[in-house]
Image 1 (spheres, rainbow, N blue to C red):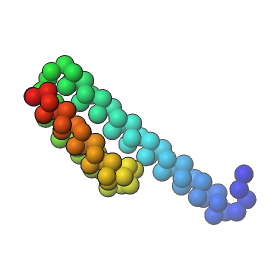
Image 2: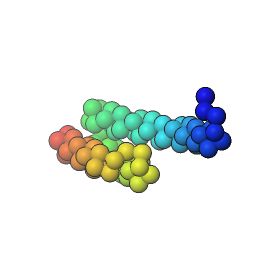
Image 3: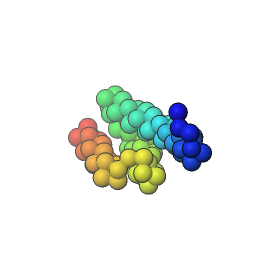
Length: 87
């Protein structure tokens, strides 16, 4: 247990940031899974409209440094490739 006031505060801040980041990551993973479900069910039209939402979430996570920007771009590229293969 830290003794200094600054260490205690940094622990509180880190805990808050961790929960916020975790919430965003979970939402992102759910969106990607839903998109992959749409592709596996051959709902190409719904997948095309839903991919915009997934891209938006990826970009926001990258902007807030929750995931690396290159990771977001790589995931967007792979999802687009999957969509074009099924379409």
